[in-house]
Image (cartoon, rainbow, N blue to C red; front, side):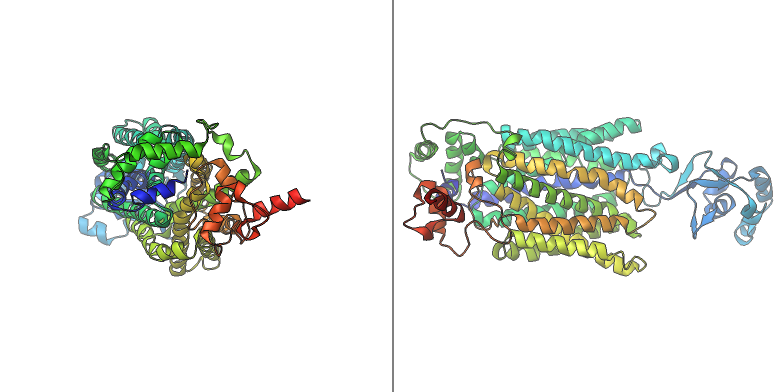
Length: 587
C-alpha cells in the first residue's frame, strides 16, 4: 500500500501537521540540546593554583601577591599544579610588618629567592578562579591536576551511555512506537539530570550522568522520525531544516541559561525541570500513522488520518476508516501476515548491508566531528560561554542555504560538498596554527560544514531505510556513531600538546565520509520505502541513480512498485534492475 497516496488524500502538509510540528516537535529538540552539552559547564575547569595555608589571610585582598610568592610562572602563565618549597612562616612574619601600600608597591615576593626554590605538587588543595563559575563539579570535588582525567572520563562515560541507549531505545522506537518511546526517554532524562543536582560525591554524579547519556541523542530520533513520517516527500526537507534550527536554537538558549545560572547544581535543575512542560502535549501528539500501517494496525492509522483530514479541512467519506483498512489488506495480499523485524534485517542482503555500512560510517564521522568541534570551542581561548554561543549561532546561516539546496540539488551532493568543505577547513588549520584569527575563521567554516552535513544525513538515512526498520536502522547507525564521542574527548585531551591535532583528525574523517557519500542513492522526491523488498529495488550507485530523475515518475512507479509490470515489449518503462533481469532470462 502506497501510504503517501493516502496521505495526499487527507492533506500531506496541512494545518494538522503544522500544529504538531511547530507546537510539539520543535520544543522536543530542547532536551537533547540541553543535556548533550550542559556537562561542559557543569564540569567546567576554571583556573586554579595551589593553596598555601600560611598565606590564607592575604588571599582575598592580595591575590596576586600570594600567587607570586608561592606559584611559579611558566610561559607567562601561573602553573596550576605546582608550588614553591619555601619557608612561608618567615614570609608571613615579614608581611605582618608591612603596610598595605608597601605590600602593593614593593616586590616582596622575591624574598627567599623563589627562582632557586624547588617545586612540589600542591599539598593543601587549590584556590579557584570563581569569577565565571561560583561552583562546578570540578571545584566541589577537586578534579584537577592528578585527577583531571576524571573530567574526560565523565565525557567518555556519557558517550558510552549514548551508545548503549541508542541501541536499546532503537528497538523500543520500532516496537512501542514513536510517541510512547519519546516520553519514556524524556521522563528518564529529566529525573536523572535533576537527581544529579543532589549528588553528594563524584561517583554518584557520574552514575546519574551515565543514565542521562542513555537518552541523548536517542531522545531526538522519535520526534524527528514522527515528523517526516507525517508529511509527504516534498516536505521532508522542511521537517529536517526546522528540526535542526530548533536544535541549534536550543544550543544558543543553553548558552543563555548558563550565562544566568552559573552554579552547577542549580544549572542541572534549570536544564531539566522546565522540560516537564513537554508532558502537557502527551494527549496531543499522535502516533505515526505510517508506523501503524507498517506494523499491521491499519484501523488505528485510519483513525488518525481521519482526524488529520478534519483539521486540514478535507472532507472524507463516512466509511473512510473501513476503506483504508480494506486497501491495506488488499495491498498486503492473502499470504502476508505480521512480520517482526530485527537488527539482522539491516544486513540480510548485500544491498542492504552496503547501505547500512556506508550510512553508519558517515554517521560516525559526522557525530565525531560535530561533538568534537563543540567540545573544542573552549580551546579557542576567551570566554567559554561566548565561544559556545558563537558555535551555536554559526550553524544557523547554513540552513538558509540548505533549505532551497536540498529541494533542488538533492541530498547526496549537498552532503558530499558539506563534508568536504568542513574537512578541508579543519585540515588547513595545520598551516595557520600560529594565527589565532585565521584559526577562528577556519574553525567557523568547519563548524558550518559539519552542521550542514549533520542536517542532511538523518534525512538521507531516513529516506533510504525502509519503514519497518527505519527507527532501528537509524538507531544502529547512531549507536556506532556514538563511539566517536567516546574517543573524541581523549583526542582533544591529547591536543593540549598540539592544538591542531584534533582538527586534523576530524578533518580527515570528514573528507573520507564525503567520498563515501557519493555511493549512496539520491532520494529527493522519491517515496519512502515501506518494506525490505522496496528498499532492495533501490541499489547503490556512484554518481548515478537506479532510475534517472529525467524519467516520467509514473513510469518509474510502474516499474518499481510492481515487478510483474516489467516486460520486454516496453523497455522504456524499465529500471536498470528489471532490464538486467530480462536480459538474464533471455540468455
